Image 1 (tube, rainbow, N blue to C red):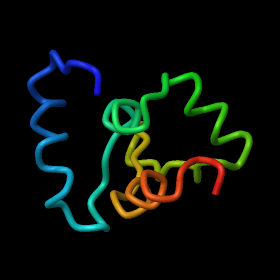
Image 2: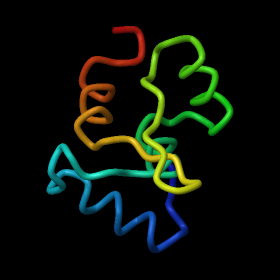
Image 3: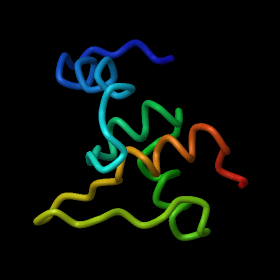
Length: 77
């Protein structure tokens, strides 16, 4: 995995496995976990490979359960 310089991101990644499926995560964590750029993630959303995010104010968030499914099944599933 890419070396994480941002301590908040590192903390989020360390806690990821212990979070409930209903917890929300942001695009930075999604990008690191899926090893995809922000632009690639939005192309994947347009292509239907990734579900659209939930909007929390102006922020985009994905449920941890959805991210786990993507990690287990891959983007082509």
